[in-house]
Image 1: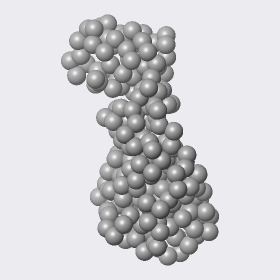
Image 2: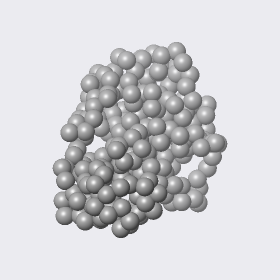
Image 3: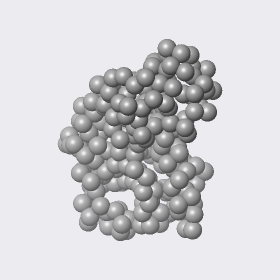
Image 4: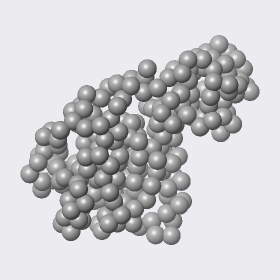
Length: 233
């Protein structure tokens, strides 16, 4: 089933959002075909296409996610688009927010291009929720340093030197996962985050790339909380 994003979708909608119309037409959808449309606000609707060219639809059953665990990602800005790969994968797993962190060891610097890069992250997130059929579009934010961070729920900072493994974390309804850049967080950054309520944890004995560490951690936390693999209601 094709999945679309329409922030204005409601029971009374008659057409797909104009920003989706080009994509809609390119899929060669036929009249009578069922699609799903997410609002990005935690719910969406099944709909029947009545006119593929104009994007006319007949809205039907409301849908929402059965997941009860909220995961917030803090992803250090990284070179080579690895932070964007991390955002994409973590969004596909259902995060509710993503904060781009300018860490001490971040090679890439956003500086005067913060808004431009946040807009790019927003588009990556929109594409990812459509691909993975998520109903919530993560809120995209920016932090100039770890001093600006506050954990929502159980805060975890990934550190391969930590004594605690992620499998030892207790189930919770909300987590915040902080992922460092190439070379990881500095000692001072880890200490500062721990002082703000984060727990340092490691992902077993493997040293993962910044592009894959967050998604691995999130999948582990969803499994611990009993949310991994839940679908739509």
